[in-house]
Image 1 (cartoon, rainbow, N blue to C red):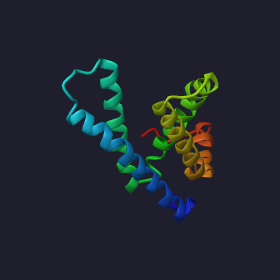
Image 2: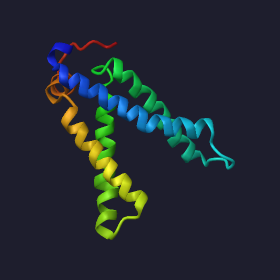
Image 3: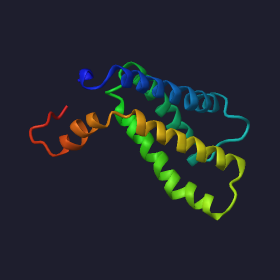
Length: 139
């Protein structure tokens, strides 16, 4: 299956997995390991736990990029949903505070990188077209 995706794209995917692991992993894991004096509310704890697990799985993507492709699809979807459902309405309402503006640009850049790096013919063949094929393996 790797012959269906160019070498440069596999390296670009590996780079994106590594970038995500570094960007999200260090901040989420350090917050979990040293959370500070105040206890987190449950939703805050779930968010940091999710990001730590997500970042850890992204590290696997460095080594097996096509098998971990659903993580890049998840990343594209959540960033696009945030941009359309949260970011743009806030942007339209007036000036963004510094944190929201940083998040807005990070999601926009991340979604753009995902769109450029995800091997769309592979996604079509194995995810979209594969949904409608009979006799799929059930492993």
